[in-house]
Structures are given as structure tokens and as C-alpha cells.
Image 1 (cartoon, rainbow, N blue to C red):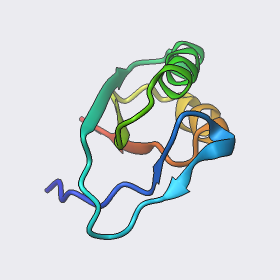
Image 2: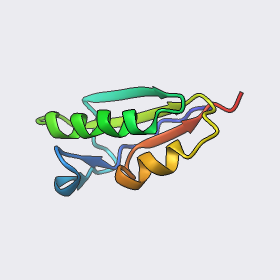
Image 3: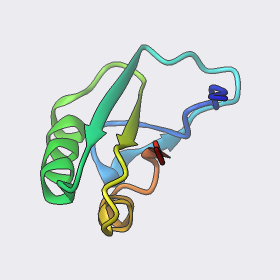
Image 4: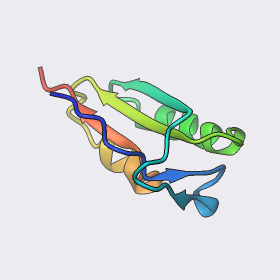
Length: 88
């Protein structure tokens, strides 16, 4: 079962994130569904982190059993993204 974990970072760019405290509230949860499109996800996340400011947010990617290296590609650049494999 899904249990909400506290977000780990907030900020505009990969180089300006700071850890959130355990009690920090998230203003926005961004959910992205993936199926064998890691480059599209990376491009999307670059845009999110470039253009989102003034709020705390978390990013959750739900993978529909891609069976490829999507997670490794995405988390190599965005390790703070929470990744869930559906595993049907």
C-alpha cells in the first residue's frame, strides 16, 4: 500500500535545492505516468524545475511496467523524484 513519505527537496533547479524538514508541507504534488519514455520525462522535469518557484513541490513518477531503463535515466539527473513501478 502507498504511504506518503515526506518530500526531500524543494527549489527551482538541480543546483539550488534544499532539504525540507520532516514536518514541511508540500504545496504541490506533480504526478507523471511513464511508459518507455524516459527522455520525455527528463525534458518534462527540466521544465518543471526551471519554471516552478515560490512553492514546495514533490514529483512522483508512476511507471507502467516499461521494462526498460527509464528509472535509471530519470533518476540519474533527478534523484529526488519518487518512482513507483506498477508491476502488473
